Length: 328
Image (cartoon, rainbow, N blue to C red; front, top):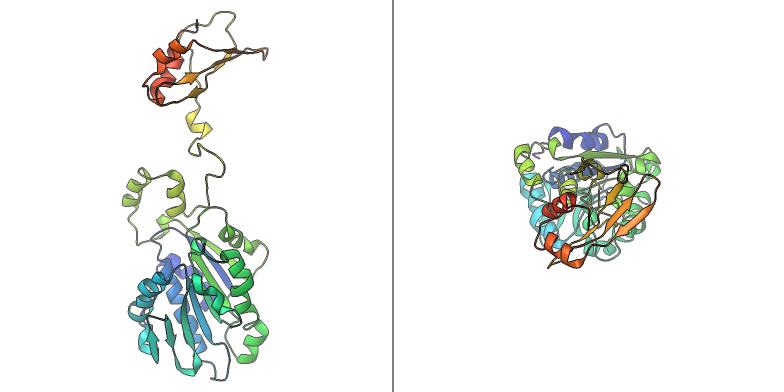
């Protein structure tokens, strides 16, 4: 086989297959990290471990679960068959079914998430979960892991059974994807806090030699910051219930000097001006809070509001409100 991993990809691979210090790895990585290649390399290595076992050992299955059938046929099959070269070791393989058959009843099956229910009742020595945040059809990632995938491993390839069969390791899994908010992938990413059999890894775009940092920096200024944080920084960040989720008080709220000297009455007074940005012209109210925390609302005449803010941009409207004389 022809497998060449970059430094960051090698870390979870070594822990799973060389040092064998963990059973379940969760890799959260940016776009362009080489997630599919890492998963293909891990599945191929699991196949060769199974080929060392006698033919009578049951459930010598390796599964890669991808979000869609097209990813099974268009991404994973050619990756395994040609790029990694697994086809040279298989008795036969089928792109349509996504199956590789080997000696001693060892199989590697590529499964689309839409068909994950068909795995119930089987066993798996290794399962690779690809982009589980995109597993939105059917039962969903959490129910699929807890009700189908994890039992494939724990009920057929426990440490006791692996020892009985003479395997080098009990059943394992590698879950890898780019985050999409605080969903079940986030929960799984934190499993190592509860179970030493689990380990998590985080890689942003700077850890991938397959990406050009200068090119990514250009993209950073063109796309939504939440989208950039997810796709390239591999962040679980989401907008939540915030409408203006790009707002940052430290960045967008700054102290300013008054545009004219305040009167004695005005000293120590805060001015709050909320602006309702409409298509035609803006509406605003003037909210005054003095040093004694007395609150007063001043409603300007609509004609004044229209004259000051009609057709103005956000920046111009704020500047106009800032410089307009307070004698409404």
